[in-house]
Structures are given as C-alpha cells and as structure tokens.
Image 1 (cartoon, each protein chain N blue to C red):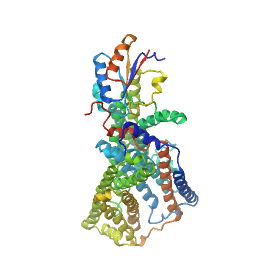
Image 2: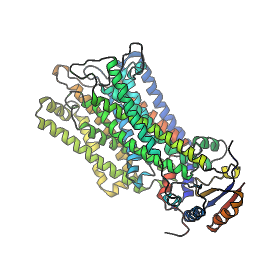
Image 3: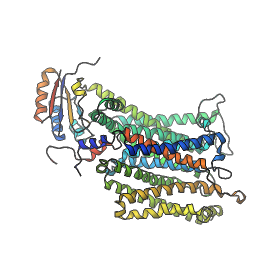
Length: 439
Length: 176
C-alpha cells in the first residue's frame, strides 16, 4: 500500500471519474428498470386512485408514510456524518463525508416524493404551500403536515447547498487534473475556485456555519417528522419520547445506508481502499452500535411506559405490537435493530467488511419495518374494536417502494461518475503537509 | 477594465518554505499577498496574521431576518383568514416558533452563501492576481503545490524575487 500524498489523493479521486464500465452500466440498467416499474405503478395509482395501495379505513397511513419517514431519516444519518462529525472533528468522517452528503440530498429528494404520492391527487400538492390566492385562504400552520412542508423543503435546500459547497475545491482539483471539455466544465462548475487564502478563509468559516445550522436542522426536522405522529391522540403515537427516538433511529439507519454505499464503492474503485480505511469503517460501526443501543433502550422504555401509565389503550397497543396478528414484524424489528448489532461489540466483526455490509443491510430492513410497525399498528388497532383491521399490501405500493430505491441509487451512480465522491481537499487536511524540515 | 498586474508569483513544494517567505515579505512591507494551497492550512493563516472572516455576521443577519419574516407572515395569515378549531388559539406561538426556526435556518444558509461569495469577491478585487495564461493554466495549486502572488511596483520585482528564491521557491515568475 503506497503512502498517501496530496498528489496521489487527487489521482485516486480523479480516476473514479473515468467513463463508466460494464458493471456500472448493468447496475444502472437494473436501477432504471426498477424505477420504470415504480413509475408505471405510480401512473396506474394516479389513474385509479389510492385503492391500488393498501391504504383503507381505518389504516389511513400506510407504506408511503413509512417510506417517507424511512428516507427522510436516511438523510439525517448523512447530515450527522457530514455536519455533526465535522463539528466534533472526527477524523474518520473525511473519507466518507462526500458520500454521506450525496446520500442526504438524494434521500431527502426521495422522501419528499412520498407525501405527494400518499396524497393521491398529487397534482394538487401546491395547496400545501401558502401561495397568494383570490380568497385569501391560507394554510393551517397548526397542522403537522404543514410543518413537514417547511421542514423538508428547508432540509432539501440546505442539504443541496451544503453538498455543492463542499464540492467546489474538488471540482477545481478535478478540472486541473482533466483535459479538454471535461476540464472546461469542471472549471466552470468550480466557480473559479483556486485555493487562494481569501477563498479558503471565507469558505472554511462558511462551512463551519453550515455544519452548525445543519446540525440544528436535523434535530428540528427529526422532531417535526416524529410530531406527525406524536401530536395525534392515538395510543402508541402520543408520546414525548418520539423526538429523540426518531433522531436516534435516523442516525442508526443513515449510518447503515452509508455503510451499504461506501463498502461497494471501496470495492469498485481500487484506489478508494487506501482512502476509506478499515479504521474509518470501524468507527462508523461503533456509531451503529451506539445508536442501536439507544434505539433498543427506547423500545424498552416504550413498553415500560405503556405498562407503568396504567392506560388500557396504551397497554393494548403495545400488547398488539408484540403479540397481535403482525407480531412477526415486531420481532423482526427487534432482531434486526437490537440483536444483530450486538455482533458489533466484537472487533473482529467491526473489521470484517462482508460482515459489516450484511449487518448494515439487516439494519436497513429492520429500520424500514420499525417505521412500518409504528405507522400501521396504532391505526390498525385504535380505540374502537369494531374498526380494527390488518394491512394488506397492494402491488402498486410495493413497486413504488422498490422504485424509490431505484431512483435513489440511480442518482448515487450518476454522481459517482460525475463528481469526486471522496472529498480530496478534506482528505489532504488529514495528512501532515509537506514540510522541508520534518516536525 | 482591470489594471494590468505588476508583481511576482511563485510556487513552493514545501509549506514551511512558503510560510517563511510570507513572513519575510510581510516584514518587507508587502502585505497584499495572495496564497494558494490544495487544502486549508492553519500554518498559512498564522503566517498571514490570522485574518478573520465576517461570514458569521451574514449568517446571523439571515437567521434574524428569516425568523422575523416568518413570524410576520404567519401572524398576518392567521388573522387574514381565521381558522377557529375548538378552543385552540387563532395564532399559536409554539407552532409559529417551529416554522420560524426552520425559516431562520433557510435564510441563514442563503445569507451565508451570499456572504461567502461577496467577501471572496471583495478580497479578490483588493488583492490582484496575474492575468497571464501561464498563471491561469498552472494546474498544481489544487494538487500538491503551494503558491504566493505578490503585487508590487516594477522597481520592487527584484527584491521580491530574491526573497522568494531565498526561501527555495520552485518556480518564480515576474509579471509586468
């Protein structure tokens, strides 16, 4: 393994921007096919209405809201790595921050689609925005759905700006390392960034501030998403623990998705193995373990509070989750999110790449199911026993869900080939700079 | 039309050489220095006298403006079309704070971007750099080389060149 230098970091990063090979093309074809099926299912659903999803009385929130929460929280995990770990000066972040920023942007883009899909009449989405109108009828700011509109729009906007800002030095480097048209376009995209002291001074200060406001933003957005549930009066949803619960879950699933993205990247681009070190992955695995413990604690607290409150409806819903018709899903959640991550206590597992990849996929499945159990169980098993029901999946929502993964990974694959997917400038900051007199 | 640049620029392989050159140039009265580096380095900031950025003021201004604007907008809308829902207040402060907080962040971010752009533009105009293709096409500043640009009068070119060479500049180019 060669020693990393400023120069060879550039080489390794720029090499990943070479025209795509066969494996990229095949993967992209698969993602586009899945996305195409998802789009077809969406068109069918728009044509025929929400009867093509499993949403029905009394379960008014189904897979789409589950997907919304799942994807928005994948985004939060990305922001944690790119912003919070930047503020805490965690060195392992440098190699994976670009992937996490990209993941945030595309996850939030994906999440933003689901409330619109869930609405049924998607084309009326603009009713959620307070636009001037003849009747001077404004949106109801007391509705959590309106909070979502503002929170997600802001989160998407901030994530995109954060991503683009971080790219500037690397686009400049890619421009310098390229020839012909590529050089021309990268230099335009870099907005004349050339690493002058004036540019670095304001850039770095701005980046710190971005990280600070993005940190405040993920706390608020995670809380707002959790309040979609918590401000209702349904048992199982109406609880004050939902804010921190959703935040911990967000970081947990976000780190798992990040792991699932960077491990294949490391494999596909040989130079990346030296940049994304096994130590970095181990640190990410420790973060997974830590957040798994928080999530496990919250599972236990929820059950304890249901018991300790003495409220019959609250007790009933938690009994239903663990021992009702859908209990298999609940126990799968516990297995994936609380039991499987226990393996990460062992250093050997934390440094075993295939094991990390499999664990991260298991966690992702667990976290999707967790949101599904939360969303479905409280509406399926409400106050009135005559209105109890079970959720039945329909093909359209299954394909729309799979299509969202196709959509997300399509963007990731496009970006891998278009922009430096490892932050070269930040990697250089990790190195001891070239000194004539060794310090 | 920008005035033709007169001065010197040099490249360095080692960071400590460049920092030493900056120190000597500053003590020689050459203060309008522009440096290049592949990544931000505190050593350069220390050599340049720890300049401070005013970007945080833009962020603060954006945050306050966004918060204030959101409060005004929500208040106006709440009273413009009254939505009475059981005993709930027409204008709910906790809900307003939620939206205002998020809106404050949004405007703070855009003000920060504006601040970064404006301040870089101002500093770039105050610190001229060569317009020659040799300087523009030098493609190792973002790779592995450090650089200094020193604007000076024609009669000072030799002094600057000597200082740069003394500190083992890899290349020194005179522009006039």
